Amino acid sequence: MAKMWNPGEDIDFESARDQASKLVLLGSAQRAGIFQALSKGKNITVLKQELKADERALFIILEALRALGYVQKNKDKYIISEKARSLFLEKGEDYVGGSLPHFLDIMEAWLSLPEIIKGKKPKEKKGDVAAFMDAMAARPDMAVEESVRHCLERKKNARRVLDLGGGPGKYSKAFVNMGLNATLYDLPDSVDYVSIKYGLKDIKKLALKKGDFTNDFVNEFGGELFDIVFMGNICHIYSDEENRLLIKRVRRLLNRKGMIAIEDFVRGRSPMAEMFAVNMLANTENGGTYTEVQYREWLEEGGFYDIEVFDIGERQSQLITAFSG
Image 1 (cartoon, rainbow, N blue to C red):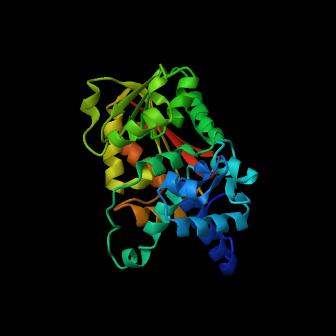
Image 2 (image 1 turned 90 degrees about the horizontal axis):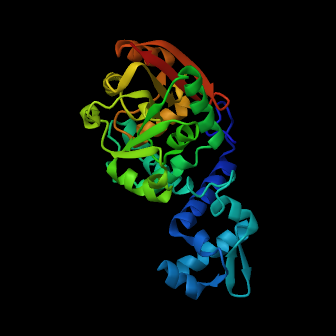
């Protein structure tokens, strides 16, 4: 898998501008439903009606996609090309269709960086739940399984896991596949979407729970305790103080000698951490990336011990585990 934001990589500005424009074009076509609609050949008249689109815009976009090799044309009918099928329709290892619409949202936020550098807060906007969840679902299965395997190597007797902010349920499903009972907790809109889109409502050993862990959510579980609380890609959204508080709350949901597991980009270990912090600057009010020293401080302050840090996926992200007293 290619790494995002390769550190120390020189920029060819002409090439970078060209690639960025192509990504915006492909992401826009995917979000507009063009690739899905072109799984079978259609002319512009039919496509215009199906997508409720502008005819001039469709023509220009389709011809650009044809020039790039992502769409083919036979007489007056367009159809997705073979190389594009694996990227935008078939959800195999090459699939990027779930992440590109979210890329558009990220780039929109990054365009506000000049104002944010001057002290303005990121613009508040209602996120595209589908685009965000689909992007999270694009995380490689191998990296997910590696994290889950590390968790179960450290907590061998685990039976019940809470997947906090679990989104599309990739980690929840991996835990279930390893024999655990899992509870996925996320915002109501997210749970409503993923329960159907990713079939989570049909998984017997997976419970779905709606709520907001930025509040004092612990009482919502009515005394229910877990062997593992997994926090995947959560801490980078929040500030130092918010993370300290969240970790203390999580401890109250763990059985004695229960384990917290945090996956994120750790400064000083992940080559992506510094650039990902820019993404958080553009998209969150207080988020960032944090050092191993900071994570250890939060965990010790929260009553955790035996802290270990594992590198996941060629050091791109890290898994931090620790036990409650």
